[in-house]
Picture 1 (cartoon, rainbow over the protein chains, first blue to last red):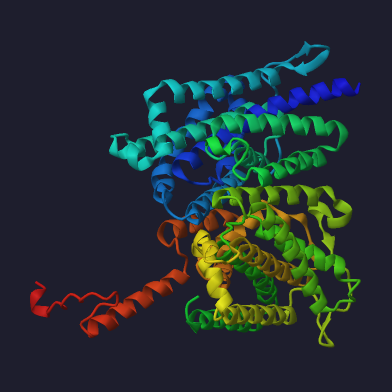
Picture 2: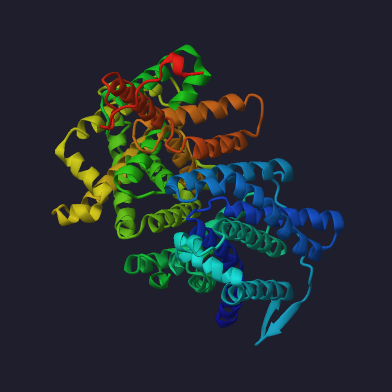
Length: 287
Length: 340
């Protein structure tokens, strides 16, 4: 019985780690390229889930929300980049922190004003369950995790095999050299901001049928995402995915023996000694 | 730290706060008494950020730890406020030292994220240990007879606690200014500006940064213990990441280059939000907009305006002597007839 529960929690941990990785990916990319700690990133995740709830309530079709909401949020991030984020690049860390904290306050309060404080829920668009090695697991969760994993893989291929991907990697290594070589650094920054908003909103849409939709749902996930990027190594996208899997599975295993909150605390606390031994994260040196 | 001018401004702000608290009636007295306790957490962030080189996002967590330490200590020390402040500052100091050991070797950004992790853990832990903290519903501070130097102090948001908060804050700011005149402070500045160079010169850079970060925790802890006396009811919201972000914004609005910006930052943001709340529930949205504006147009905070005024003053002075303040020859002033 314990083994079955353990297997369930491991699978559940892996599923959630895909969403954490998707959120952390955008956070990491914005830090890696723009040097900004985007505190408002969790609010964008919540925005994705809230807009998905509206679309499902009004139209009744989840997959429209899946395709439309992340694109709308990515487009909405463009004026935010031009109006705010662009002006904080290259400045003291506190300036970016202050600007994105301001954005967090604005977005969270706007979501509270429009959506209200009551938690809502969305029914999974795919019902039923899948049996795997004697383990019964909701089919939608598998599907959502597979979509998230496919997006992560697609982003890796985008970075690796497209000219824009090469530009992004150039800007990450040295914006000055990239600019001197003719890379449109401003355009790269804009694309990264839009992509990270897209990823966060997509994670919100995918997670909405699996959790409670609430205007503050981004804050706990933001904590996990920050943990993932610091443990994985700042600016290291592969490291972030690996760290997300470690933390997701670790939390799952621990939740068999501890209450969910203590399992979360223990999973995070277990990673702290890693930071003492390797202050720049497990994969930090390669970043 | 610049001359006593900034200290005098901070003292003037505190005196004005005290006067406003007495003049504006019971509601504003309570509001200002609470706000004064927040000033400690803003100052603690500035100390951690500007002098220990740790952009900590867990200063409100240290404030909360100080507050809970005071709550737990209230009965054992029979309401002795000096011992309560000592308990709060000690709890904040020890917690900051533990965090400091973890983050000292990290880059600034790594340290910042590590403190975010710690704030998240503390918040989760606070909510999980309901018998100790009261969780999100909170826990009342024991009803004991608070006293200081044999004088009774009525707990709660009132004139006495406002006076107490302002007095402790004035002592703290004065103490920081006195320390800033010493050789040790110059070493701290040297370590903050270039810890590698300070290390090569023979100073134990990490040790200095650790002690300064510990001191920032002690300052937050003092504020927390005062908050416990003023508020009389604590919730785990105090430990949250959101609260720490507020502390950063208060400090940044005042100016993170100097500890004397804290009082101005807290009072400006809090009074702004309070006045706005008379017309709208959406105060956070306006505070957010204020923060964005400060980040874009006044990134050095309000105290940086002083520096600009000083620079203008120096330039004018230099120009009068025909020599610019930076040492070069000042451009010849334009005559009225040249301006067409």
